[in-house]
Image (cartoon, rainbow, N blue to C red; front, side, top):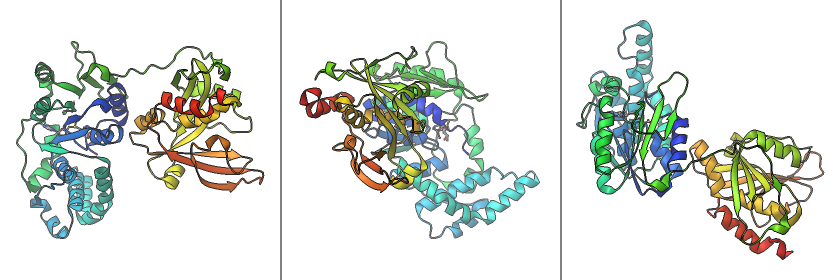
Length: 443
Ligand SMILES: C[S@@+](CC[C@H](N)C(=O)[O-])C[C@H]1O[C@@H](n2cnc3c(N)ncnc32)[C@H](O)[C@@H]1O
């Protein structure tokens, strides 16, 4: 609905190349629909977020998110809505702004289609407001904003420098586009409109240079190609304008993820060669590599299901197993929105209790993080399903808790659900935990 919303894939790219988990404060310039705020809350919840925008909708949301709702009155063509909203709470009033913004698309009433749509919205205003309230509530729940500045984004960017905050800016790509979008609302709503300069994108490069000279750390999203800066990412979809991201951050904060492009040769793990000091490595793997592993090691009776994120687990360069994650409507329904499904956690050998190690590793945030990045959300727990001849699965004992169990349809075994919290222990720490309890020397 809003023009210029950051595409989800582009947000994913930003979070892959810039490590916000090392930032304390971030100034988001031109928050719009607060998508970057929501991603930050999910992926770097320690960050204090300072938002900014000038539009009525964003200022209303910013006010709600910071516990200081702003005052506004529908007037002119929308004056009648005040009576309808007499007893409405601030969230319902925010929903009303959103509906009025949608109506604005037809407000010119320059053809029969627009007239019909505008009238329909007008007559069914409260119905649309009621439908919009849950959206607003969800958005507010998903964003934690520490402060909101209703004013010019350049001012907000410069004030970040004083605070040693990172700037994450997504200023408009075109001059006057937002003003045209919000014209109807601004003409028919009375509110304390912030003063700001009409943004002209041709100034972006010079303004970015000024920020740099002032010592800013920034991440700037734009459709402009700059030959004197290397973009840290480019996002291009079809014929739409590409998005480039230029950044200057703490040197350590760049993560370069490279997929292994070499042919899939591997050394299978030899438990005798493991030591207390062995090094664990987790590698993101593509579907084809996973299929190969599954074909070799999974029981032929198991139907292979592909997941959203796959990992190969290596210890001292020897392949130990794999972990596959997914998220499905069933998992969400049964365990809530912050639960990730371990579709498979496989050890390539039965000896040495390595399957327990792979199960432990599957709970680690270091792996779950890839799913969080993919779906832009935070996971608190993992669940998995075990198919076992016995009433409980040895591999999960002491690692996950039994959540439910039923006999399988054939009556010769059990389908058991296991779950537990996502662990903040790193793969190497989990290896040490495993080694102490189950390492080969322990028999
Ligand atoms: C490209 S959008 C940002 C979109 C947002 N990041 C999102 O994904 O929803 C631009 C936003 O900049 C705001 N804006 C336009 N001129 C501005 C200015 N001078 N200062 C601050 N915000 C401005 C508009 O109201 C609009 O919400």
